[in-house]
Image 1 (cartoon, rainbow, N blue to C red):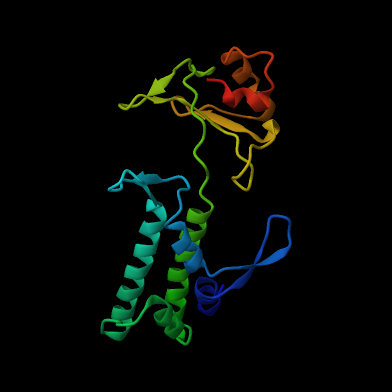
Image 2 (tube, rainbow, N blue to C red):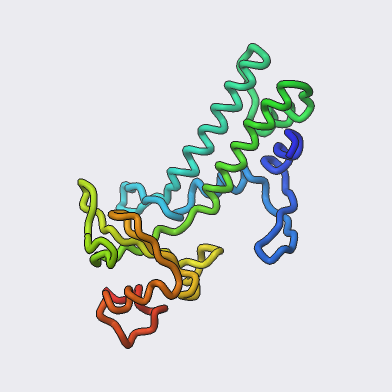
Length: 204
């Protein structure tokens, strides 16, 4: 990717490849990041005066703030003065840069794009059953006594339950990992031998 193509992805609609291999038109990455700042995905809810929570995506907000601060700092380093306009207009001026600054800012914007995509594709948190690990027999770990086991059963799009053959699990206590058919122990551990594996996560 060049600096110009990176900036194009950040501030303009652009073509991107979907999971099925087709190409679709995507919104500017900075627009997607701004929208993510107000999402509830994998984050927390702030308090409200009337008891109504405000959806906050702290990870997305942190990335957006960092990009704005980095852009202003890089401009000051390059031009020797503080930029007074908005981020979009500043990035447009970078598109015309040449030489070492262009190469350097290409690396900077590459990192931004990676951070944004990682934030947008953030996985839903795994299920953490309070069961003994079949490998080490431990149930909790750490000073907060967090459950050892975790089970990720979401599909690639992070929207629906995946087929059990795609599930992965692990133990944060001993580092053991399992996937697919190796998770048969989960059915026995939850004392549900007659329950389909796809329903085991619903067992309290």
